[in-house]
Length: 80
Image (tube, rainbow, N blue to C red; front, side):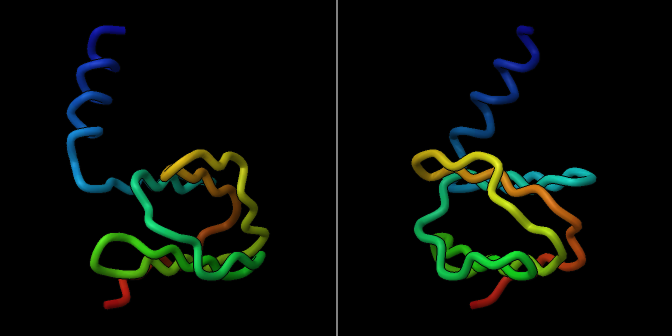
């Protein structure tokens, strides 16, 4: 459990982080959600937009500045 806390503390010190798993994307420290559809999600970050294309995209968890998205992710891109 000590390793988990150390890693989480390390990541929380960053401006943002994005974790991509097999069926999930976790985004920490986003600014705003621009578009939220089942095939495209656009999230404003500090300095760029994060575009997620896929199918069956749903928000599984939404907290202040933190979002967990589930679905089939086909493409993730950064838009300036």
